[in-house]
Amino acid sequence: MKGPLTIAISTAIATAFALAANGVRAEPLPTQRYLPLSVAIDAALAALKECTDKGHHVSVEVMNHNAMVLVTFHHELATIHSSYSAHAKAYTVLSYSYASGETTSAQIAQRLTRNPADVARIQGIPGLILAPGAVLIQAGKQTVGAIGVGGSAGPVNDELCAKAGIDKIKDRLAP
Image (cartoon, rainbow, N blue to C red; front, side, top):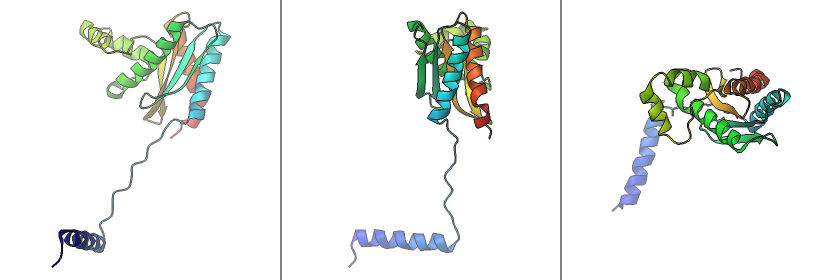
């Protein structure tokens, strides 16, 4: 008499042979592009240099597509709030760009500030900020991260510095 374990093993082996005989193949694993740390560092350094060359003491943060911080740089004279701002801007653009197709925190802020209910909703979610200064990092149409800048003399400058970081790595983002 066969025990339950013997029957289960025999059934599994028979099923495997049957599937193999019918030509059934396993679905391949999906592929996904990601932002390497070395590329994130290059983008952050370029953004920091752009702002520093213009006399701004900023913080720069680069996150991957899951909002995990890859690199953060601070000018030695940056304020404490610049760090929070850079982080929140990058987090916001990652959080709100997927459905809308927007690629900058300025675009998201412009859209959401039109409706007081949207502003109230955003203010209730910790870590988000409606201000220019972050840009998605995309490889083709796939989001691989975001870069946020905070602390310059105005959020438009922050976004220009973030875009300088993207420009530095754009040749490595081609699909």
